[in-house]
Image 1 (cartoon, rainbow, N blue to C red):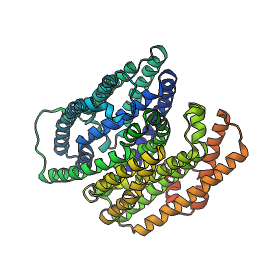
Image 2 (cartoon, rainbow, N blue to C red):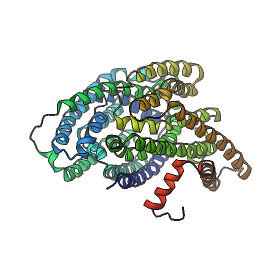
Image 3 (spheres, rainbow, N blue to C red):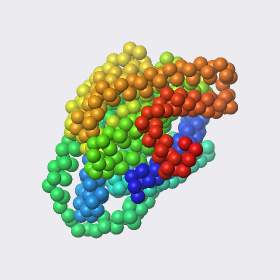
Length: 507
């Protein structure tokens, strides 16, 4: 298959799987809030963040080895693939075991992370979360082979099946036997089942990885992996500082209720943010193949197209959030779960900034440039934690959002494209930022116009008006984008693909 065909297949399956997952998550959250208290929802967010910090021990080995798999898979070097997968299996088993042991050591200090804890049995709940995280590593190493070989659609199908089973079982429990311990006990059971199914699928497609014969790794590959793992370790610290500390900070300085409210918004925003993650994950292997096999002109062209698509998606989703986010929360959960519009605006700004990094990060990962910006995550971590703690103490929930924005603008915003353009693809940094700010200005103006137009057309908060609002935002944002950028080379390229590859002759 060509890269475009394979990527299209991966994207299609990823979007279907993700859409199903999103619907189920919203359903489960609704039943959860109706059946259990908001403090339990805060526990979910807190434990997820704590265990994300423990997973730091993984050191970024998975991404480093996925990068190392691109070339041997493209060259059909079975020995190298087998060697890498054997190494990954051993490491992931050790990682899973270490996470469980290290997690147990945290138990005596759990209450320190919570302001005014009133939950009984919290240590037992934590152990269930811990086991779910630890055992996920015992089979999940095989997913990396599917991803590296542009077969993300198989992984997506298995994940969708697992999420459907989990959601249905959790909804059943919440309706007929609303006990939190039973609700979370289902997670490790489904995790084990899903990982076993993925393992069998991989064994079917790559039977050679089941052979017991040991194969030594090429010294060049070893050196590359060790170097990338060292760099990915600090990258993972940075990622945890930005994405896995907010709930801990809010729990410590504001309380579990604030964590619960925050996580309702975060669920919606992360849903949209992860949507592009499905798209990026589906094409990253193709980008890796592109990086090792094409000239700079081709790489630059594909990067610009990818960035253009990301910016397009960022505008549509950000404008929709600006108009409809609080309306969605009110319809879904009720007025008592709303944040002030001031906080919501900063949620959206942070979302846009994080979303717009996706293209650069995809090409950086596919290029294996983890070592080149290894100091950035350290600066990101220090700035984020200091700013978030200080601002949260003084300004509450919005402080943790401000901390994330400040740390990102001072580090990732300019360091990541600088490293990519200096070491992998030749693009002038000023040209990149010129496009970035052009996209941002169009997004800002379109958001204001969409909000004004919605307020002119709709006055009541109803499901019908919300649905019409979604249609309105999608029509306005896409119409504006196509009108403003209709003559750009990237738009012409996308139009030709849609017409030639997907039969949209009317374009």
